[in-house]
Image 1 (spheres, helix red, strand yellow):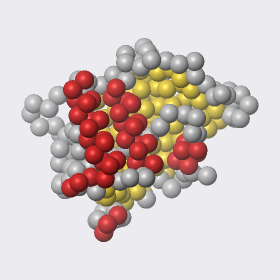
Image 2 (tube, rainbow, N blue to C red):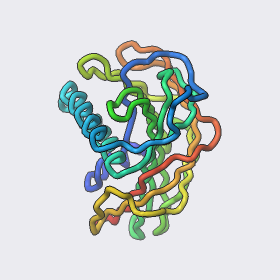
Image 3 (tube, one colour):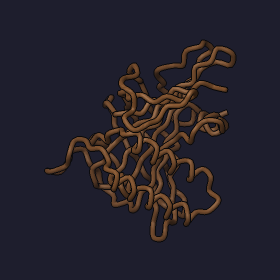
Amino acid sequence: MSAIRIIRSSRSLAPFIAVAIALAACGGTDTTAPAGVPESFQLTGAQVGSLDSSAHTILQANPGNSELESLVDSTLLVFTAGVQAQHIAATTDLTSAPLYFVGIHRVVNQSANGSYSTWAVVGLDDPAHLSNILEVSGFAQSSSATAPTSVNAAIGSGLVNALMLQVGSGGAVTEWRMNAGSASFISDPAGAPCPNFTPTPRVTCAMETMHVHFTVSAANGSNGAGARQASIPADVAVPTMRLTITPP
């Protein structure tokens, strides 16, 4: 079973993977930031509200798409928790705009059935409006009571996946599922509690630094779309929301 299917089968957990939703594929690459681009920022309440409004427009245009709904919910979750978006130079033909990245790391420690971690890193050019976005995700499992802290694997192994989406006029979605490349995730220990997250007896949230590199590509996309690719060839540090989950 693939990592993505394993994640989605855990219905008792909150929605997981934050992913790609892009407005237009402009072509070209970005490896340096234009003048005036901030290195990091945190969404204001008004920007989170704008993000929520944009998300509803997308969902209304794609009724019954539970996968898309889960992805949109997760994007809202990471920003409302107070995670900063970090500008990171990525090479991609998804957009010519600067990309800002956030991460989500879920940790499930259990002795009876083995422990596991899931990771997702999301790059956006306009977090307040869900414009151009790239998502890369990973999964690792152990037989012990402690979840793994890293994974490094190839696309197609079932351990790492990547996705780009475009939302066009009226919220119509075009997607690229990456079918070549690799990705690596390494998590530092948990830090301070997430500033805007209310813990429960089963779920706690802490800030974390995730170290990520990847090179991914798709030969084509839906609706006759052409090839797309993205890469960050050396490890970069991504601000991350770490959710530690106690199974029922």
